[in-house]
Amino acid sequence: MEIEMLFAKYDINNDRELDADETKMMLADLDNQRLEIERQVHKPEPNDSNAVSSVAMASLVSQQDFNGLSERVDKMENSIGNIVSKIDAVLNKMAAMDRAKTKRRENMNKILNTISESGDLDEKAKRHHMEKWFVKNFRDGILIHHFEFPVPVLIL
Image 1 (cartoon, rainbow, N blue to C red):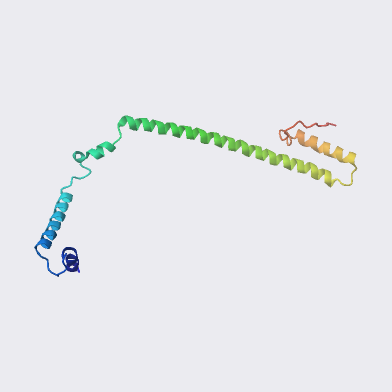
Image 2 (image 1 turned 90 degrees about the vertical axis):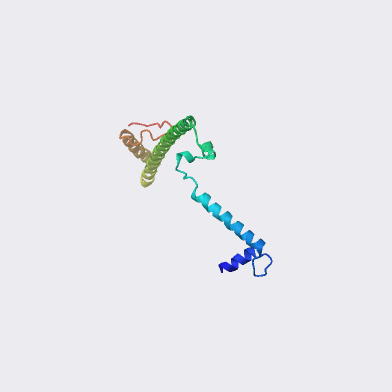
């Protein structure tokens, strides 16, 4: 198989024999391969400090540049930390507002349910019953700070 590949590459006139020119071409290729192998064997190690090429030196960053970039990264991290803290505070306030809104709805539902459950009472009795319930809950602190507008309370 290897011989067939060799002849396919170097036997230009396809006469199944390598003449002098074809042999010279094959020997030149083999010599080039040998030189490449020798270069790879004698190539300096990348860990060797004396073997750092000029291309590698050009890609290094100076200490001053590194320190400047490091300070910028630190400032950005600090800024992002502050922003995250502010977002967290806003989310906490929104959650508190949502809880207050839910509590306000529950209390209003209780008021409406109280009114509707007392179907056997007349309007005056319903109003009196509702005002009593409202005053009791207002004094117990259930309804305090749950209204966005002033609520008139009739204390009897």
